[in-house]
Image (tube, rainbow, N blue to C red; front, side, top):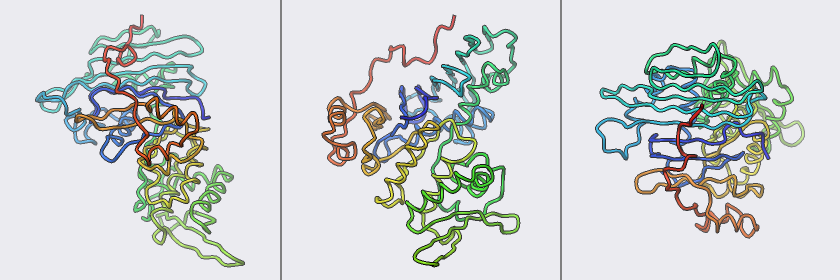
Amino acid sequence: MGVDLAIRRLILKRFRSVPAERIDFDNPTFLVGRNGSGKSNLVDAFAFLAEAMASPLQAVFDKRGGIASVRNRTSGQSYPPNLGFGIELGPVNGDLSAGRYAFEIKALQNYGFEVIREQCWVQARSGRYWFDRKKAAFDTNAAGLRPAFDAASLGLPVVGGDARFAPVVRCLGAMRVYAIEPAKLREMQDPDSGTSLRWDGSNATSVLQEIERHAKDEAARIGKILASIVPNTTRVRTIKHGKKLSLGFTQEWGKNKRLNFEAFNMSDGTLRALGLLTAVYQTPAPSLIVIEEPEASIHPGALEAVLDVIRHASRKMQVAVTTHSPEVLDAKWIRDSHIRIVSWQDGATHVTGVSDASRSALQQHLMGAGELMRSNALEAAPLFTDVSDPQGVLFEDLR
């Protein structure tokens, strides 16, 4: 249905509420679970990886309250256990046919940490290249690659200046997570480049202005889709107030009947829908977007249009959605392969596909995913318990 998967699999070890999980993705992927199941922690894994490609690792931890706040708390140790991330890539912008990146961070006392292992391989048109870092030791088959980094820094952002590994850095750095805050869209906003929508929508005016400047057809499409979600709203635009920008909306009905509003007059649902549309149509497009609970403050009757936006987005980028709404899952095009069940069991977050019984009901069109959820019959597959499975380990033998 969608574009090739840039992110095929995410492996997490001891990250937030996740002791160990291996999550396979489709496009789009719906992460379905109750409040408190850990969906937001999974989402933060993508934000963490994206930020780590552009910011020092210390800053990424500090933003989250330090490594002690990020660690999985099922451990009884007095200071955090090792954290691990692994990500398996599919085709990346025609530059790579596949790739894999993983790292493990050891927590030290007094909130310190060090990178104890980091590994990456890519399959490019010119060949297969890799590097394998074990603390200070660095091994690679990529001629001329001799980066310098300290113990508390990831090597990939440094290595990303090399054309052979740059596609991985660009792909991971271009992942975006969105939890649009309507209050941020009501405010006057400072202008910026408009090339990347912030996670809360706080620069939506600049992004919309950039879309209007370089993709007028897309800007017009945003207006049409917004009208299907918010009746009579036919246009959205940016308005200058001195050095600030705000959002303006036009509503039309009947003959020559029109009203103009600014964002502070608009409902939460309208502003959240606009934030979603701006995320999807921003340019350049992200490699992956994660949308948290698109159903929030959206009338159930408008969710079909929102889901059409998500389906459209999956044709040009990878999409993941968190939800606990059966109305979101009512879309007839959602298959069992699109759904991952997020559950909270024994003090930990677990992620699985749907059970055989749920899969059979969906494949035979006996019930839709939304119907199954309403009847408490959308069940998770049995938990994966074999920790020795090689698909769940972080590192490989690259030689």
